[in-house]
Amino acid sequence: MRARMGAADEAAANRYAVWGRAGSVARGNAAWLIGADHVEAGICAAQDYRRLALAAVERLRAEGRDPIVYRRHRGEGLAKAAELAEAAGMALDPSTAPAELDYVEALERPATVLVFASSVADTLAALDPSLDIARIALPPGYLRKRADHIRAVVAAHDAFNPRLRVIHPDATA
Image 1 (cartoon, rainbow, N blue to C red):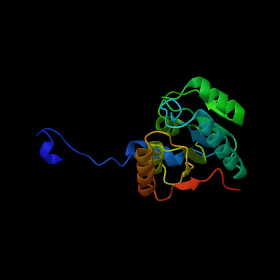
Image 2: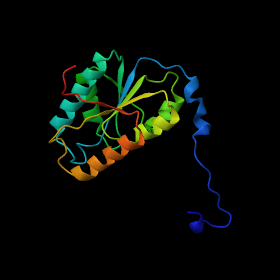
Image 3: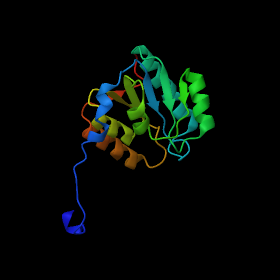
């Protein structure tokens, strides 16, 4: 990398020190479900996404998480996100900022963050090593487009973040 840098350029390791206050903010009992644009991108069918999200919410509730806040993906339709949040009894976070920034600025941090497949899990793991981070297991047949790519991304996230736990919504509680 240094060979490609200009003479006046510098490289510094990012240890997220500027966001170090992540540990000093109270943690509540809430869970954030980070939405995905899988339907909008044609990656899955709308009914499959909805069914998987609703089942994941039930798993979180079985763990005692309350409230559950749905944070939509920037590419996700607002109407879809609002309908899903209402159907599952979740609060819909209106923010359009990246979840990582909202996490850092939150007055109370969630106890759990749940993702479908997202780099948010990796970033939050670096920001807050004590945060419970979970990924929803994508069932067979869910991926209808870019399946190999998405499976590779999921495997990379799982390898990067060894404390990431996987929630299987279709399994019995």
